[in-house]
Length: 213
Image (cartoon, rainbow, N blue to C red):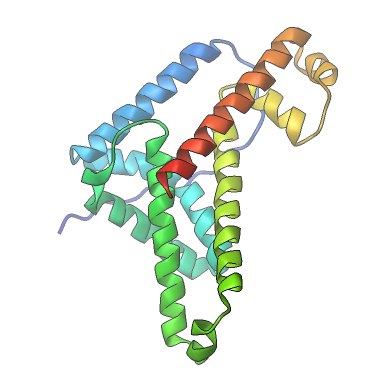
């Protein structure tokens, strides 16, 4: 059995220094994600390590919020990447497909944990007789949680200054004029970054939704 060591997760923060070369950076990021996905499918263990380092925080956050237990979330996260390695041949390499594919596996692992809890709990009978409407509500909450996490991850993956501008606009609710004054960028540039940033986030979110249905 092949054992692949996973590196520790490292947190990332919004904001930071405003830099240039946005379009080149975006292309490099897309090329990198496509490349690392292709390497995973080809059986490159170092690709799995890189994927774990970049996306394990997203998977772990989803699992923790969905399950509410740190131990279960940690176990589910490990199982997601073990399953990703074993089922790597099912991945079609692309920048959008990789995180969507991981979240799809995570949803299945969360479901497995919940099923295990139901089997082991003393209230199995009550759990298995939940009204259908309540089951649908739980599934909807899971999808909403995943959507929020995908949006946050998409914003984190934006290059600066676009990431900073989107954060200031929608998390701190600053006007375009205020953002232009804060960043020192022309007002038209700020508006362009907001528009393109929203388009990128929407594309990422729709890709994840389609891939995990």
